[in-house]
Amino acid sequence: MPDNVQVSILPHHVAIVMDGNGRWAKQKNKPRTFGHQAGSRLLHEIVEESKNQGIHVLTVFAFSSENWKRPQQESSFLMGLFIKVMQREINELHSNHIQVRFIGDRSVLSKTLQQVIADAEKLTAGNHKMVLQVALSYSGQWDIATAARCVAEKVSGGELAVADVDEQHFAAELSFADLPDVDFFIRTGGELRISNFILWQAAYAELYFSDVLWPDFSVVEYRKALEEFAHRQRRFGRTGEQVLAS
Ligand code: FPP
Image (tube, rainbow, N blue to C red; front, side):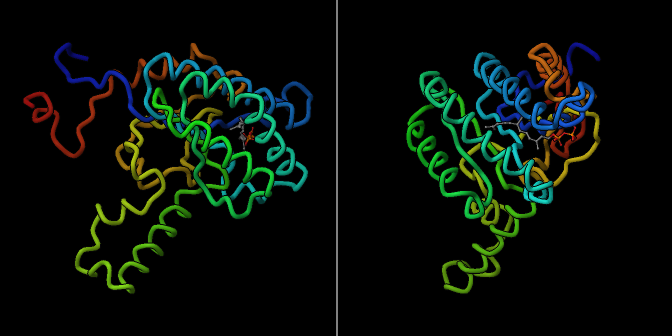
């Protein structure tokens, strides 16, 4: 790469699909739940590294709308794990000035989990070092459909004219409309797909796929990914020459 190519140094917003927990456990002849536990321990390290690197927003895909199709025992285990992990980590997150937020359809979560989420969000609402956003019962299509409903309600209530429905008005109704769009989308575990994670807000994200299974995806691997991001030329529809001239 020539020296004068504009590089984006650090992404503002990193989104991660933490895939591969089940396969990692299977390789060790352990139940899939063992992999999820190991995955949650790695997440602790990745959050810390993100904060130390100066990332503004880290969004992790903890449970998709489609993950409800998993065996009931695994879904229940994961819900219990989210409660335990939040209870275990929340004070440290707070003392590190990290704001914790959740995105997704929380109406389908247990009352206990809804309470844990509400408490975590309330406790950390004033923190500004970094936002840790957990996608739980979330899918990009759910987010877009929910926003479409809000726009339709505004139109039918006379608050918004049909002619004014554009990208900006629509995006304002999506989850995390107050945060920057995703710059860097990482998926571990070897699959080359987006799996209905962030869609609209990842329209111009740089994609990074790693074969490493999530529990083995270390801080070293994360730094490697961030290093690659720093060498991507982001053109946002312009030509490379225009980017260099700007
Ligand atoms: C995907 O791997 C992983 C999940 C569905 C769960 C991820 C959850 C954690 C890492 C815990 C995080 C905790 C909090 C509080 C956010 P998979 O099971 O699909 O793996 P496979 O593709 O190998 O089967």
